[in-house]
Amino acid sequence: MNEVEAVFREERGRLLAALVRRFGDLDLAEEVTSDAIEAALKHWPVEGVPPKPGAWLMTTARRKAVDRLRRDQAFAARLAILQVEAERAAHAPPADADGGELPDERLQLFFTCAHPALPAEDRGALTLRCLAGLTTPEVARAYLVPVQTMAKRIVRAKKKIREARIPFRVPGANELPERLPGVLQVIYSIFTEGYAASSGPDLQRLDLAEEAIRLARILRRLLPSEREVAGLLALTLLVHARREARTGPDGEPVLLDEQDRGRWDRDLIEEGSALVVTALSGGPPGVYGVQAAIAALHDEAADLATTDWPQVVALYDVLLALDPSPVVALNRAAAVAMRDGPEAGLALLDELAGEPRLRGYHPYLVARADLLHRLGRRPEAAAAYRAALEAAGSEPERVHLRRRLAAVEES
Image (tube, rainbow, N blue to C red; front, side, top):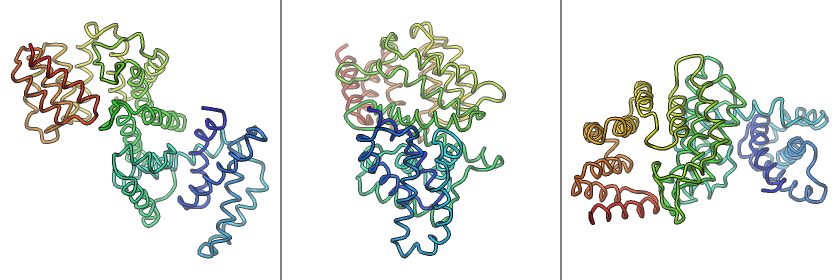
């Protein structure tokens, strides 16, 4: 990525958020943000990147917004109100895009995109479009829907914000506990899709995983005292640290016990482990902090056998109390299998067999097949691998499961 592209990537979200607050119109803000970037692409290669690129983009975008409003008669009444403010801003000293008001405005956009009044699927789409800067076709690919469907979804979300008068603001202290989890969940969902693509030709979508980490870093800078923000960032870093070792030369998944741990990113592990301490200090643990602590135990172990499985199970006990979901119970069962043996783990999985949310859930089917295989129950393992193969989303997962099934059938 060259210098100009790096600036655009970093400044776009800040610029968009500031313009949304100033003009109260997300569509207008997106249009003039694009106009400002287009102007920069024309001038910067010739004149060089200015010392304060964010301020340059802001000044350009403000002027273009006022020009658009002036031409559009439907906005005439609003223009009369906004003109004084826009002119004052144009003659004021340039704002420093690296400090001051812009980060707070970007945080306001975080909470607007993740507002509970929006459907869950719309929150993630709008966050990717506005804060991660992905195009509508890119967001559509991330959600595995047609571009036209995603375009309608984004328009619907913007319309909901406008008609419901959802405010572009950071929630007050009394609202933050209720609203922050929605923001964290959106970012985590983006990361999860990047870590393990739900379908398609690749196991990982590294572009999505890295965008989620970038958003988590922004949120961490803006809310440094929120321990669950630190926990989310820690979790994404500790998991992403294994990215290079998670796939083989042909893109097939490489399981944790077979990964070359020398390829793990030690800088990310060190940063993530330090954040775990922050996330778990000063109060009751949160779900992201506990998950990050589990990830840290995996990353710090020399191999699978020397992983502190009793501590991993203990952390899953804490997590299950915080989030009594079948997925957490599934992960705990896998950890128990490593601590106490495959029979103990399989007994826990069998207890979850009637859980509707795990019916057809690919990770559950794979976990059961693997434990049956370890116990030498080959016909049952083969049947479980076939069921997992039918439920697998990405092509690398299907290739991997076909090989495991063939190995069971041939043994």
